[in-house]
Image 1: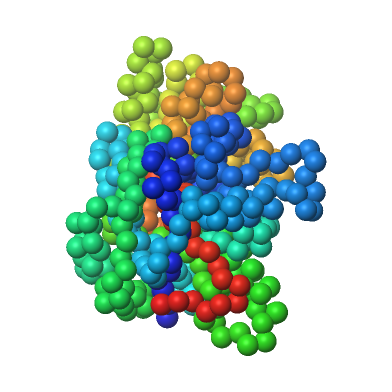
Image 2 (image 1 turned 180 degrees about the vertical axis):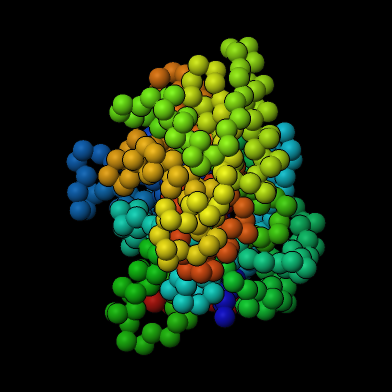
Length: 446
């Protein structure tokens, strides 16, 4: 059973900060060093100081970015730059944005989720995690005693029962409304009505939750809970550290957008384009898309449009070889992939485009494996991937369709993980809208 709880959220104080557009950031794991510097310069109270503080040469055990994050948080709370909601609440979170000229709205809510080991209850991961990132987020938890960013979770709401419960509260003035650098508008409302909260919690209790983003933070929260649990001889599961802040949005939401992640290959020794195309012919039907310097953009758009149109029925990839030459690759037979991948993987995993691309081309033809993984650069923008080849930063660019939501849930429900860089949920959640401060050993308030 999924157990959700309202919480006394902490938000920026609009009475102290008249303009909030300079304090929010994207999630810590998509911020580049250049963006980190820019956020530091933007505002003295920018959230970057909490989630991704700078490192300095003199840092040590007693003075480092984790210690400074805790100091900033306590200072901002003390001076009421950040203020706590006086009542336990659930927070409605809406994002309005455009992708490829089309407008979307994604709606969800933020609450606390009682922690459980992923896959042993109703919470399912879909990505592999890395120990270094988990340790980093664990250090943040140990120093701040706070969930600074919500984990991104998905659930099924086919009849929109939960969504309908949120709508009446959206008639109020939003607690926060801000538009970010990507022109995404974020709005946050408060639900502090006990009756409405109870109805939402009751409706959610039998749902399966799939983690879209935030696997490292979820695993770090579980580890943090275990550390504190060993010190508490009267552990009841009600302790606030046995919960994590999560954003929930329906799988059926029309604003749930997954963007593809393209691949650029470089440092391919002894690469021969003519021979490579011949090798591709063993697995793929190949259609050339010839372009000129003037028609590059138009041809690329047509290729991507054709991929998207037929990608629901076929496994398709775009390939850019440089010199204005595109190819459309269409897999001849799905069954050709099976001997190339691990036998114990579920069928849904074997039929992923990312699995097929790696098995048939990267590993079989180009001999790319874990030892030379650095030959692959992952790029979210197709035009950027193509430009990298033209600029000599890569030899080949593979353009992919988006992974389907039903593929993600089918694999996660089998307790399997997606291949690396298979999904990119867009837009990212804005960091700094609300945070949860963990009380040392105290029970959760409802």
